[in-house]
Amino acid sequence: MNKFFCAEESCQANEDPIGTGLNRQYYILIEFPTPWTSHPLDSRRITDKLQDLKSAIDEAECSLMLLFIYNSNYYKIGQTRLIIYYQTVGLTSGYSKKEYILSDINDAVPIIEKYIRNEPLEESSETNTQTRDFLVCTHGSHDKCCAKYGIPFYRQAVAILENLSLSHVRVWQSSHFGGHRFAPTMLNLPDGRYYARLDQQSFTDILTRTGDIQCLKNVYRGCGTLPWQVQILERELLLRYKWDWFDYCVQGRVIEQSDDESFNQVELTFTTSDGIVKQYRCNVVEDESKTLFLQGPCGYNKIRKFPQFVITKLVEIEKS
Image (tube, rainbow, N blue to C red):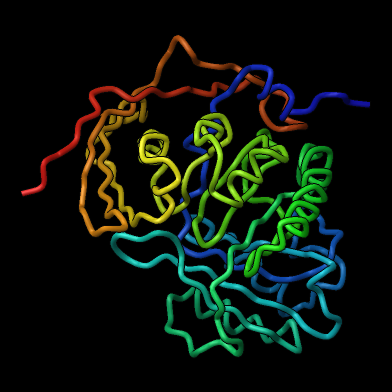
């Protein structure tokens, strides 16, 4: 039996998870009970109509992510919950949401097709109460680390949420959204923030937005509304502005980069809760002294390079 686990290798090498949040315009969440196959749309009981979307979704994967979610406490037989988070243009504090309760899972197909084609949508069938959705990857058929570390953490997260009795907060099992070598890994929507190597204390801090913000230094993967290079600057500012940062609206861009992306000049603009606009600029540069060479994902037999990055020449730009 192969005893290699990529999450153990990454943790032992002290790999920095920042910059690994996937930058996506849409997240499409379909409530569907486990187990799931490696590609969720190949799972048993998936209808032909839904499976027919597989190629279109794969082609749109740079802008769209489809995830299966499940929590037995929320699931009702004969109903399918479809949740779509979508990014808006400009400064934003996260994603907007449409949520549907469908009597037939096939009813999700025309809705998803409209998102793939960027067509406008009618109002959803449920009042879109503002919620915080925490997705924990437990997709062991995709990578065994997500089962070994994700499933126990998911159970802990459900217990913590029940103990805190927070309203409008949900925790879900989720299919794969990248970063299995950082298991247990989590995606928070509507923030669009990804997390790595979570435990009970760090999850509680994120859930309640209290405690020592420095806990995020080693568990924060980045925000999906931003390019990966800008995510590295965003973490620096998050640690500086602490938990207030989560209420700020942000927008970032890459100004300049080398062909191999070892050098990147980036800029991030944000608005505080008081309406103050600030802007920072820096270089995000590969630190060759910290480069890691790891086997990578479970089942991958070749050594891969995992560059690590540092920030240089960080400055605040005076707004005219």
